[in-house]
Amino acid sequence: MQTFISSITKSQASFAPLALRIPVGITFMAHGAQKLFGWFGGYGLEGTGQWMASIGLEPGYLMALGAGSAEFFGGLFILLGLLTRPAALVLAATMVVAILSVHIGNGLFMANNGYEFGLALLAVSVSLVISGGGKLSVDNLIAKKGA
Image 1 (spheres, rainbow, N blue to C red):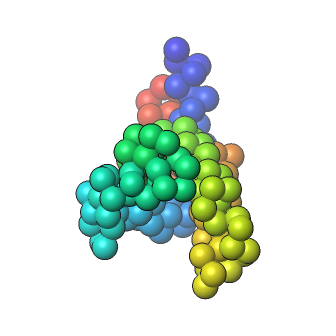
Image 2: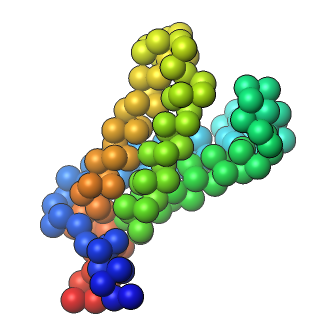
């Protein structure tokens, strides 16, 4: 068990992941809050669920709950640097679904509801899967305690 925890929490001894974690964690949390709570102009679970069902992601309510939870709680974990790799992996998968189910047909640019923003979030998520939380992360504190 100790080896498993160490493999998840160990990361590069760098401050670089922090520069990714802060803005992307906040961004994911805000988008998740739109889906879950209707904050920041979002539609909440009911409205997001209806929209997801309308584009073929069924059952819509559960898909909204899953995507919203991944974004909100995954974003929180990314922000804290807690279980960074698993959280980033879930967020990367969420972005792949968003890109392929919503944005891919609209081309690259955000002005046309394209996938450039989702692609950027996907890239950061994959980077955090590879690097881990970095020097200023809860993961780093856990890894040091286990060492």
